[in-house]
Length: 206
Picture 1 (cartoon, rainbow, N blue to C red):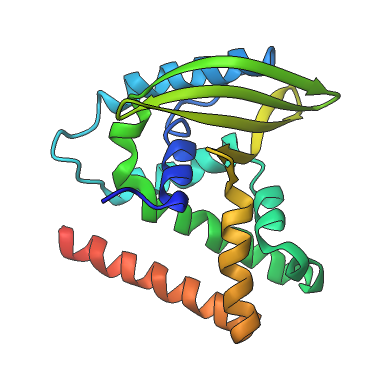
Picture 2: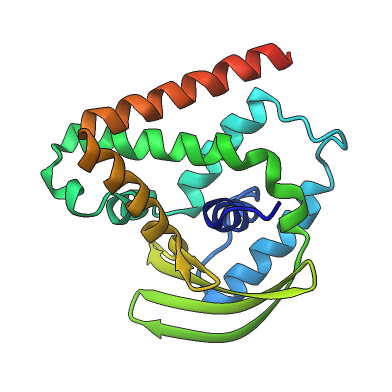
């Protein structure tokens, strides 16, 4: 069974977040290339049985904060509903969204992160950039573009496109359906319940 668009995008995204901090801004392409190279070394240190500890999940959340302009991704993903939220609600949503991404896709990272990637273009406008690449996966070429923004001398990712679909747009469609058929509070409850399920699963694996 083929991976869903959401899974394929998020696995590609998270595959290079498992790296040490300190990749300074230079060429956006160099930043992506260096980060992906470090991932292969990091993955080699993981347990071969694929089990993920709570410590690794916590580390993933920390690294997402370092490598990602997550408030911007959350804003794009929530779309029109973001403007209707209070500062406290926005903060809560960013936190929940980040934890769900880290936990739900962590186990699928190993194979995707080892895929070969070549770079085909780069566009820079001020402190924003797009790095275009092609990844070989299962004998297929998948076009990817990384949307980056520069903060305090280092690049951060605020969106990702895989095979013509943007991460923010895929999640925005899903979130909008939940809110339109129910309410924003329904979306938050679903996200909280999912996190509780992950916590139960993690406890059962110990």
